[in-house]
Length: 446
Image (tube, rainbow, N blue to C red):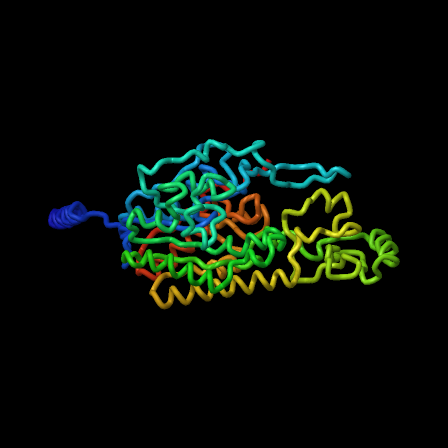
């Protein structure tokens, strides 16, 4: 290579080096945005689902991972201020029946060597010191109380600390116990954005009791609509925007679906033995080898018992040991308080349909975002994948529900928080990050 060629090569190399030094590596930055919403002052108004009620109790870890708390972490990326919650003490928490949170235990059936998982209280009682009033030095952003119905929002006695008059889980943080109301306390922070999920207890108190609460315990649809409208009007009157969730059907909860109507599995010999027994008692009840319909109590029929029909529901609260060892559902009818018959299922689904229509109509008329949790629970029941992890409404193995089968696990709360966030991003043209569901605790097996 001659000298001239060397000079040219040296010159070209120098140009390339200078060009590289003058350039800076560029990465696309994630530009989060609040879109058309204002998350500077967020308030959540609800019952157990927004309060962080899980494993049949209110406890600190579940509160930290409740739906609005997880959403607030995402909102903090677009300018949300503090999100203050009425935390309970660390430990076993406190339930609506003054119970401790439930944990999963492995139990031995009393009649054989069969084992099964069942929830059991973590302690003999909940931490009663959690009933102590937290004072009114601050305005809380999470005004959600387990057990709350729409009518409770404006009831002054609801904040009375006596469990016979009010709800101690509200009285513990009410701004003025016995005088203030949840609806009034929700306005103290002058919210710019609200998260509302109410109506569960207006129908599911009845459902989870197997109809024992009586049909009158289901809030009338017109009353629901009126009370819901009043709450939302009070929030929007302060120029707040927000998101509201509707009500899922029983088919979306493991509490109602874990025990199938025909999960009574018999051998040919067992079926023959039962058929001989019922031939003289009630010939309409018959069994075969394989899957069979359980026998349930029904006062409307002459014998007081019959086989359950498809579409009727057996509650998770029924004793597993009795199903395994004591002939419950075979020779002993499952009591009505553990069953939702066809009429009761109709009452429940009819009420939910009316509530959801009222919610949808208000949101459409007033330009409020709505999280369709009824549809999301239906999707979850068929299986849902987040970052390679499968979730469903299967009891325990599905990961989305706590050991009580009705309230969410911490991962379940994260899944539901993301559903709210997706709707907010779409409706308010926002760009808010989703929650990393898999980093939160799932079900703790013994």
